[in-house]
Length: 400
Image (cartoon, rainbow, N blue to C red; front, side, top):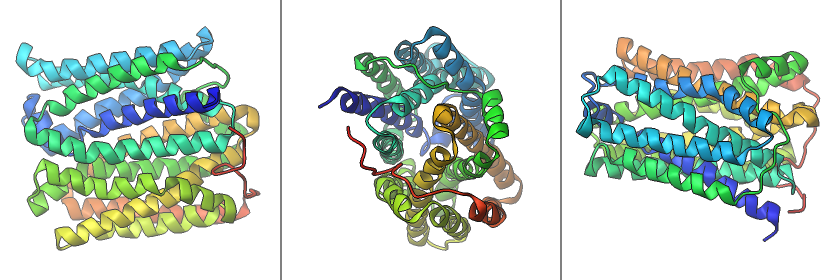
């Protein structure tokens, strides 16, 4: 195996582990927050997830700036992973060794998120900076993200059945392993990993990036919505336990993981417009349908379709970022895309949790699905005017 191929595998492994650790918590989130001292279900679950993603948004630029200033990536990825492991471990041990209020638990959760985003964001940046072809590097990232989320949901549900705190212990061990794994990677510090100010500057210089950024935001919003509201909806409406709820999430995450690479190659061949717009419009309709499903079987079928449509859109949207950004700015452009994605997750938790709490699950599904459809309708004229060519971004012919 060549050195770039080896490093690609190792960095994809870090991305996989971070996403696996993160999604372990989702299926049993209501049981977890109860074990950590929460007295409400939906509201406490929402703020527990919001605390992490708010830290993601606040600290992604800090990690990038620190890495740029030092001219190194690997030590910062290792520090983020180990810091995240300590944070998960502290949350797991808190009920046994301290009497923390739930508000204090949220502070620890935010610190864990502030550390974890360093490992994830800088590993993604190093993947983008590797030689051997952007297609292979982003293909590896997409597979790692999809596989991590697909594995985490069902595994997390089963762990919750054993002990609501078990996902935290496993997540801590996984991030510690990621910190050791990245030490084997050759350090490369080329592209800047920008925060919010740099992402907005990027948008000013290349306004057309607003299209993939907007889709990245709304698509992650729906993912955050399913992680919180979807889980509680399945459990309360159909009487599922945490293990079964994890399997329901896996019905989305599995096709989302497995189909990213082939659908990315499809967008190289036939263009980005159709997968993004058609996929997004259909995605919104299916999201609404899941919230109206009368049986768990129909809801499960809807989740599979949501996963397929998500896989259709996601690689085409990431590839569009690369199509539109000047080559020297691709690192910052993708950093901005990931930042807006984190904002989308945050909005999904807040919007979904607030609407579901006030008006019920059906209304929450309707609002989120309608937003996806509306975005597809508004951006269609803009997409049709974009001067983009089919490229080898995914599945190209670059050498390893």
